Image (cartoon, rainbow, N blue to C red):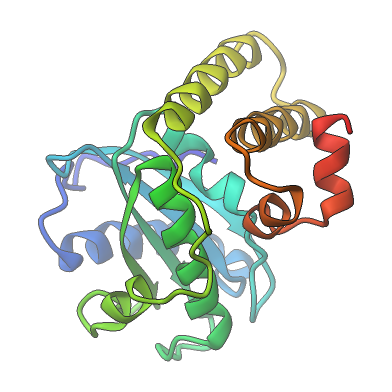
Length: 225
């Protein structure tokens, strides 16, 4: 879901306070029920820091939110974002990153590298305050992690192919009703595009499955094997 900026919101991100100022108002605009659920947003920017979009990626329960890596970067690829920031809320008011928070950030850093999109920060917010992974040096630590680093090099062509397929698919979907079925078809097409691009580069199915966080059998189905 695309989040619209108000006339009071800055269009350029110069620091974490700018991010929080915008996302605090977004969080407070939710009704009381939704404020008690975890949200995951992504802010997409160009290289100069101009905001291209703010997207609600996932809406979870009061203590967790499920994240699909392909969904996180879907809009970033379509809108040519070169830099992104993740933001999610903790309804409990705690600003301590969970192990799941750190793990998904670690994973998304590596996916972003494949697509040549920099994940530059991850903020945990509450209605009153926030914490930045970058400011606390946690982002630096995760960028050095080898947990999700693939064993191959992916060239720029993969991103160009992914962007082209995504744009073509988006153009088709603009003329259709935005139903759940259409969204699932779009996600499948993008997953197939990435899986095929990696497979054509010689990446084995097991590694593709780990990267996309699915089973090898699902990758085989995506690839039509």
